[in-house]
Length: 78
Image (tube, rainbow, N blue to C red; front, side, top):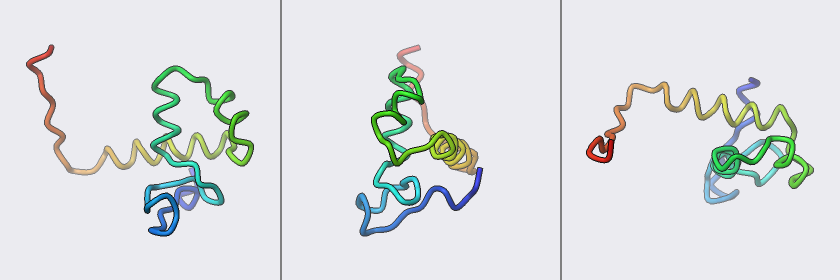
């Protein structure tokens, strides 16, 4: 992934990470993928988005979750 594909600017989408040159947030891409929408369908609906942009969003999420932060999980529902 080109690390510069995902950017954050307080003046664009309230500073949420977006694919460079778009207002398409990483959050939106991940949400649609998690709901089962194929990447091709997301790209078709957002012509400025590319396959590379979708991959960059996924890589950004992976790298973000690799940080040394512990995320508490409620295991009572398991």
